[in-house]
Amino acid sequence: MHQRSLLCLICVFVFRDDRVS
Image 1 (cartoon, helix red, strand yellow):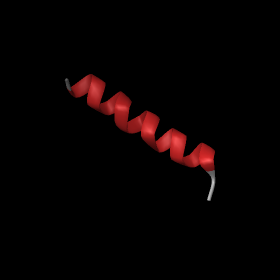
Image 2 (cartoon, one colour):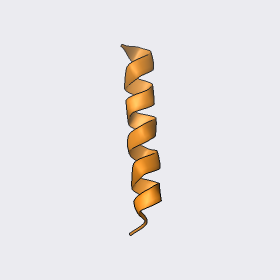
Image 3 (cartoon, one colour):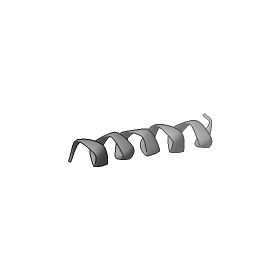
């Protein structure tokens, strides 16, 4: 598994959550 991919996914989720909040 690619760690970077996971990090990117988490980053996107956090970013979206931050924008929605």
